[in-house]
Amino acid sequence: QVQLVESGGGLVQPGGSLRLSCVASGSIFSVAVMGWYRQAPGKQRELVAIITSGGATNYADSVKGRFTISRDNAKNTVNLQMNSLKPEDTAVYYCNVAGVRTAAGWGEYWGQGTQVTVSS
Image 1 (tube, rainbow, N blue to C red):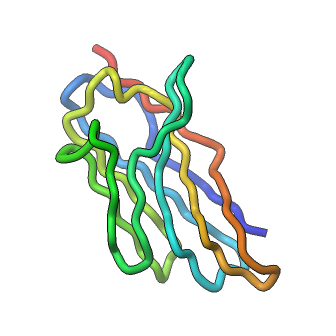
Image 2: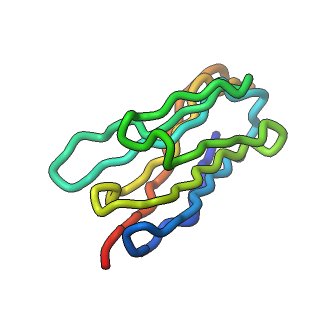
């Protein structure tokens, strides 16, 4: 069984910064892709950023230049540094790990979500 624990959400003023962290625990042999998605009220869940085990990254156009994703393969941790936050970044942010290899096989897992609110 794989569990994801997210932290770092909260309320911040426009232009401010937040750092999200997600730790994957369990009998994990490897994780191919780690990432962050978000869902705003009334909208579909969307990709924010992903990072492969080799360090390749992909970002949504709306966050390029403002957000930075990073990971620690040894600790199965993924972080999202969010700078220059805008009100439109307000959403529930979800951690996702895909291509997870465990003793039971392969899988994909989601965190419970953490609220990020950007407001003055």
